[in-house]
Length: 387
Image (cartoon, rainbow, N blue to C red):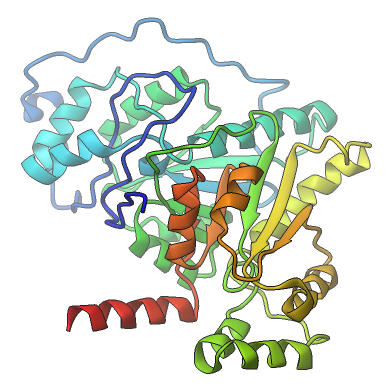
């Protein structure tokens, strides 16, 4: 079994292929900054001055520079702890506290953080934006990436330096100083929130914001640099957990019977239906310009459902919603990891941790959507083990 960290304060150790950067990393603090007085260098007692930036690459912005209004864009909020590697700084915070953590960050503020599990996903979003700007120079229908962090504003300098180093086009920051970011996510009209903090992900889902917890694996499959590839589970991710509740309560035979009896009854929406819908709207902009066959966005349904016994209801629901899935894989209970290894998505969403772990074993960056009946069963199983 692949080693995975389920601690919200940690991201799994690993190495991102083909991304050769400094091994340094950042960590977000969850301590209360509100009780601290204003920080300055004298207060922090820095023993060394921050190093000067050397060899910073110039940022490249394709086309005209403008920032879309959040309500017009597809807003993706990404925690600094999943966009960049977090282990070293987080260890300083946990072992030595807030003051030493801030001192360390400032002393190393010109050392760029290494890429984290969300980094290839964000780069793919920017590649899509480049194509969209070429086809629609004045359109605000773009991916808009917001960096979300619990950090104090002092750490923002290091984050900005890192973003410039990696030539990322991220201009919107949300540095909350230890408070919850959920209210800000709603103000940004967030379409998707990715974080290493499972509690905040659950809080976002409770507020109706699509969200998932990201993990890093020891093995990582190479992914496309020109096409964004996103894979979804079905039940409790794109769809509600209605059918999964039947399966958990009554078993597989009753589940098949329920699906046959309700074949023409649409499934209710799940927490990530809106994000798939947003991807679909951007895909249609490429189709309108004759780029269906070389569209830089591709979506996948990877479900444990079987095609003949329970797949038709899922497909009818997607069609009724007006949503297209480029590829649908009905695995009838077979492991998802090998299929995901062939798909090579930038991110895969699933509501069950054993599927997330199976994907990670094969090198896929998987994100957990803590929604639906499966979460209650997980809690029951953990409780039983502890007795």
